[in-house]
Amino acid sequence: MTLLIVIAGIFLLFALIAGLKLNSFISFIIVCIFVGLLQGMEPLSIVGSIQKGIGDTLGFLVLILGLGAMLGKLVADSGAAQRITTKLVNAFGIKYVQWAVVITGFIVGIPMFYSVGFVILVPLVFTIAATTRLPLLYVGLPMLTSLSVTHGYLPPHPAPTAIVGMFGADFGKTLLYGLIIAVPAVIVAGPLFAQTLKKIEVKPLEKFYNPNILEDHEMPKAGTSLLTALSPIILIFIAIGAEQFLGDGLLRTVLVFLGNPVIALLLSVLLAIYTLGIRQGQKMKEVMETLKDGVLGIAMILLVIAGAGALKQILIDSGVSQYIADLLKDSNFSPIILAWLIATVIRVCVGSATVAGLTAAGIVLPLLNMPGVHAELLVLAIGSGSLMLSHVNDSGFWLFKEYFNLSVKQTLRTWTVMETIVGVMGLLGTLVLNQII
Image 1 (spheres, one colour):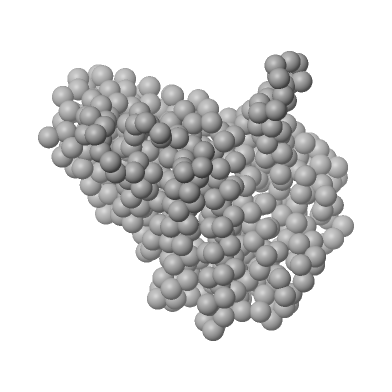
Image 2 (cartoon, helix red, strand yellow):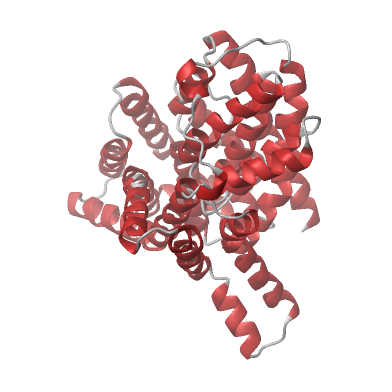
């Protein structure tokens, strides 16, 4: 009966989000109450579980996502993203322009939310394609592959970061493992797959051919742009190295502290306020307005994640998690594949990668207790599954279709296939890592 209640709860979530187009946060709360009541929980206990789940989930995430949004906004508005793109394209030349936009998408995609990165970088890609006279999809899809991979696999993006918190996974290791599997995924789904798309003729809407391109003197220097955008990653990796290779002592303590994700992002935002704001001639008030605008964009993301955290707690407190754990303890089925499949199914039904990842995480939480399971790899398996088979119920599908002025069939042939390759490559990479670590 418990399993049927969970399935009914998932279908209710599908119906509310995909069918009735109800807000995801409200849908999560309704499903929490539904599952809790059917599982025999007292009404006030349900409310208490919802509050606990939201509080436990957001405590860490508010810091990470808030600071990450500030950094991403500064990188975008200052022209740092444009500078990185321009320098890389000039360095690689027309012949290897795909690799230039791939690296740009990866660098910019780490600190920046997907939709922000898309809107900032796609007009630059249109300009590059027009200047080099290369097919638009040949140039554009590799960059979007990088953005998609960083969004699905890597902290500090919303879903991976939230799942790291749910699973008690190591933030730095998740980031490191994610980068390892991201590289082959981006190469196969980006430049290699885009080679098959040269004959697809597309012309984007003309209004996107005139992006707000900054003049050279208005942008920060290339070294400054690159260092600032990557500063949180640099600090986190230094901390990982200190933990592995330095003995107990003051230096190790300081480096690990500075590489804590919260401190690393805080220091990076402070650095960006100076390098991408004050040093560029902006007043402090103007820079603070930029930070404010960046944070405003994540309010609903935080609520969706909070709702998923509430559902996770309901599954635990109502006994669902223990029931699932008892069902799986004698199973020989790979936890990584199971987690990936669940995330894939939810992604296909709901559309949102974030909702798919967070919902799947709450369901497969008991898998952490199985022998030989690495929490970090489970995070990556779910992230990979959450990107699979993007289609007409995914906002990213329509964002790509409209900007590139494609038909639905063309979007399925390009965007959907790319996302599926990313999801499959992520699964394969996670399975390989599971054999090594």
